[in-house]
Image (cartoon, rainbow, N blue to C red; front, side):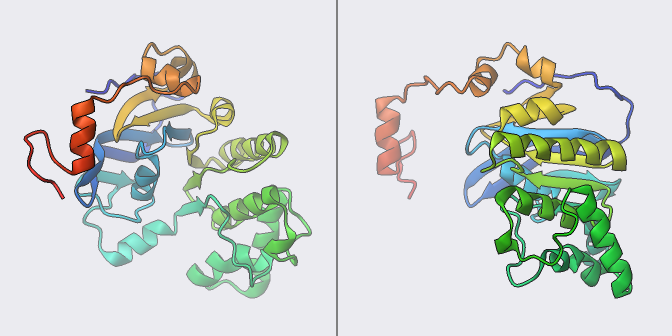
Length: 282
């Protein structure tokens, strides 16, 4: 059974804006998340990390309300999303911003048009107001004056920042970020980390970041959730993470390969599609 570390935060009494209890998720017959319970507090940066296949991307999709869990509950902004009617779910999603890993900008649109897209879809603002709001957000991510360019004319770091501008154009209560530093050089990655901290401090946003970048995690995280094989291995501060005695956690932090040896009989059964009792599983 995985152990969970409790922790103290700068504002340990902050209200929870996301609460997950006993979350279970399957893809086919494979259990991806197993009784995951966690909370994200108002105004904090929660980093979710773990090895490949640990379930962190699946958990993020659950928190973004893109999939329904097989069991367990998820409450976002005090609303249980499990039984929420479609219209209420639509209204809730307008309070959530998402910055996708690759930016996900539409190549046929200018940067400014990409930023204004959520405003066109979800508001009845006049075009002039939309342009002002888009320029304000581009100023915030240090892309002022780039609204007329196409995404193909931007660097990788600029695309990431433009994606953030689009994600925050409606001033969401919660911002989700999927691998924001992936593929960026250290200098650009550090500037993006500074932007994430600015969004928390200047706009009071609650931010959930999925990343495998340890340097970014140590810089931005108020708390860290570590997933391992679909279960919570750790929840706590960066200092607690660094000093945690778990060998598995230290392997993740120090990028050490697992030393676990596979039993030859188990390996043969896996190849032949048999379970431990010799019955075919395919």
